[in-house]
Length: 330
Image 1: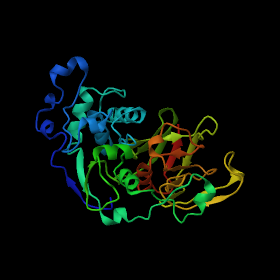
Image 2: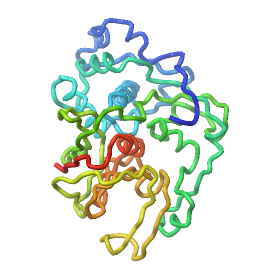
Image 3: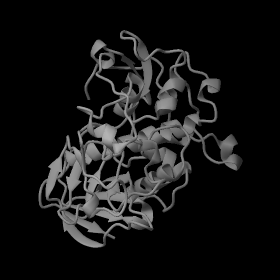
Image 4: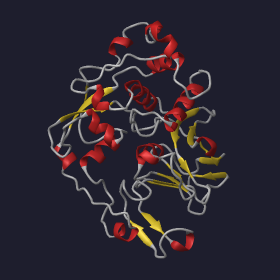
């Protein structure tokens, strides 16, 4: 992680719970209404600030992110990507199958993912200095930029901490993210590096999931993904990683596409270019695994046949794979 130091929040979300036996995590009085965590928000943040976001869901998403089963954008709402991550966590931790929240899931998460859920971060001068860009939607105009970078500090910080931009603002009401020296509340997200030997990648179309496996077939990590569409389906069968480009440009060639403009454009690297700036090439017909300028849409919209992840998940995966790693579309 770059751009500043992280200090522990003085009011950890689950400190009181983590000092108690795990049986105390789910109060018996809540049995009829389902399991729950008693969540304490950081100083200065109220339930009204969160709106319809659920404080328990924030904790679950953060702990899933730290467990290498990415929920995608941490936003406090849950949804399909979070249910997918819960299902992946459950099957890898000896819990009954499914994507629901129950006592067993909460106990396991609290046991394996101890630590603060919120932290604080002091915005640095180099965070606000940019450069930032007014990113157009038109390919021709994007191709004229020297980089398709972040549009403002809030977008950059939200992506760095795996957060939805509106959620970052909700945790920091009245904060001007373009001013250095301010201490803001963030979530204690998962690591930026996948510390494991990757032997194989499975792209699971029916689950909108990319799974990373070791030589024994164990799942090291899972990510939510957008995998093709009805009009532009992803391939089937086996491929392999042929190249990894952590700062990739994007070339649109109309001769190899059935959509888009009728002219070739080369769009420079950056987190807001069409592939999010990260490209894992699969060596066949232009297929690859890549990032996205719209992380909140992962798993919810279609792609043109490739496999789309959030930018942070794509960077994490790109840093862990090498040429020759097997990739299977299943």
